Length: 333
View 1 (spheres, rainbow, N blue to C red):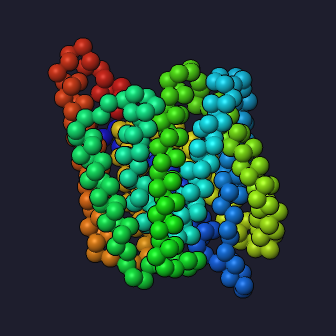
View 2: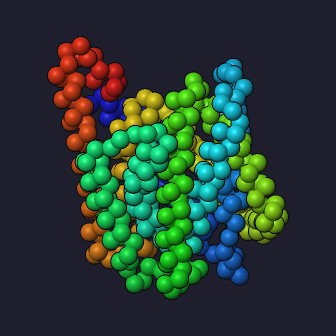
C-alpha cells in the first residue's frame, strides 16, 4: 500500500502527465498541418537535436549544482555509439508517424522484447528461458494483428497506399532494432564502468547533439526547420513542449527505476502504453478495428501475465530464503 501511495503522490507519478503531453506534441508535429497553407513539419532530425540539446543542458546543470564530476567515465567513442544508435531510434520513431498512426506505433513498441533478447544474447551473452521466448512470440503476434488489420478510416494524412504502409512498418522495425541495441549497450556500459546516471546522460546527449547537428547541416535541413518555426509560431511551442517533456521523462524514468525497481517500472510502462493508445484514439480520432482490439488485448494480457508471474516467482524465492527476509521492504520502500 505504501508503494502505491508513493507512486501516486511522489514526483515520478507526474511521468504520466508528461507522457500525455509528449503524445500530443509528437503526433501534432508529424501528422497535423500548420497554417492556412496546410504545411507539414518534415524535419524529424531537428526534433531529435532539440530534445538532446535540452536534455544535455539540464543534465549539465544537475552535475554542476550537485558538484559531481563532469569528467567522462567511459571512453568518448562508447558514448558516441550509444548516441548514434539512439538518434537512429528516435528518427525512425518520428518518421514512422508520417506513415502509421500513433496507436499502431505505440503498440508496436511492445514488440521490442525479441530484438532486446537478440541483442542481449549477442552483446551481453545472456541466456533466456522458454517462458521468455513464449511471451515474446505472443506479444509479437498481438502487435502483428494490430498493425496488419487497421480500420479503413485510419490512414495517414501525408501518405496513402500499400507502399507507405510498408515503409512505415519498415521504419518501426528499424526503431525496434536500434532501440534494442541502444538499451542493451547502455546496460553493458553501466555494468562495465562505475558511472553516475547524470554523467552518462550528459555525455550521451552531447554526442547526440553533435551527430544530429552534423546531419542537419549535411542534409541542409537546419535553416528550413528554423524558418518553418518562424513562419508557424505554434510549431515552435510544440517543439518546445516536446523537448521539455522528453527531458523530464528521461529523469523521471531514472528516478522510478532507482527508487521502485525495474519490475515496477515495466508495469508502469505497460499501463502508459495502453493509456497513450486510448488518449490518441480520443484526441486524434483514430478508429480501431475489432482485430486491433483483439491484438491489443493479447499484447497487454501477455505483458501483464509475464510481469506478475515474475513478481510471484521473486516473492516465492524471498520467502523460501530466511536470510533475505529484509529484501521485500528494501525493494518496495
